[in-house]
Length: 376
Image 1 (cartoon, helix red, strand yellow):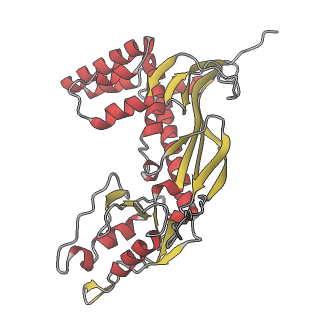
Image 2 (cartoon, rainbow, N blue to C red):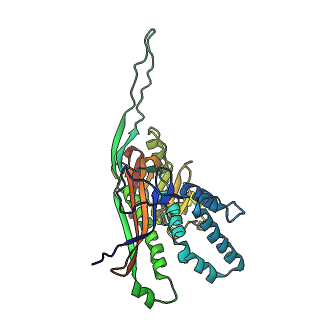
Image 3 (cartoon, helix red, strand yellow):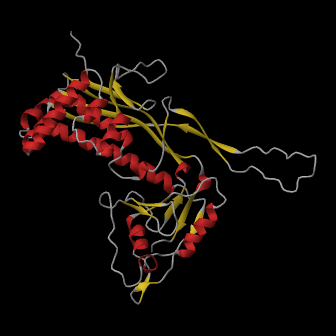
């Protein structure tokens, strides 16, 4: 009796050490020290540097980050997309995007974008990613506790002081998802590539899950608290509470810390109410327009205190509190990310799988504070 073998297609892997995407030489192999990466496909870091600059007149400039045979493939698809853009033929562009000729390229670009630019939620963009290829390790956070001595007697030398530090043990977990379609479903469904749409949705799900994990890690910091004030409270049509005392508490609290705060995070309501507080925008002034990257997500300079950015994100669950912190308080530990399509002729299915290793972790809880009661 013959044995039916599963076939792996478009197997790719993201290497967090050099931030490049490679062919996955063996998708079923463990990611240990003996693992060997396949051919280099894409420099994910350079890809997003070019994408984010948006200053190149050459639409094919982005193909410079692809290597070998994938460079030719990339030039082909981007040339066709540019032609479709110039002719404004949306059906042609859609056909190119969903074409099976470019599925590996499309999967690769997804991994390249995800590691550098989080599109679903904006909290992950705040923190530094730490490459964790071995998935375990220790992270040290150093304290600012050196001593300065006054009135040292003649012929005496100051006693040395040693900077203290804390160590956080890191174990990066694996998460993942998959979508599949049967051969019969492909035959029955006409007019749309449902499988391609499901693959795209799965990537969005992954990004949202990572952003929610970052939000949960921020909110887990409740040991250090400052008492806020309800920025949106009003009486006789004007704001009741002046937030300046809260601003002063933030300044005083962080004046002796190892790092100054550079972010304040809350749900969107806290953001909107602060910027429309009459003590901030001016009494009698119209409501301030709230800029945002997408619905429920906004970023702006914090009022009065220089150097702090206010980030609003709907994945923060607290409806009454915000968090002020130095961004080095939390690190995002990133291990390899794998993606591949596996076909099984026995079950007549095609399945797309993504597995990733990701962990947001507080490494210095002394520089992150919850601010309570900013909304009611």
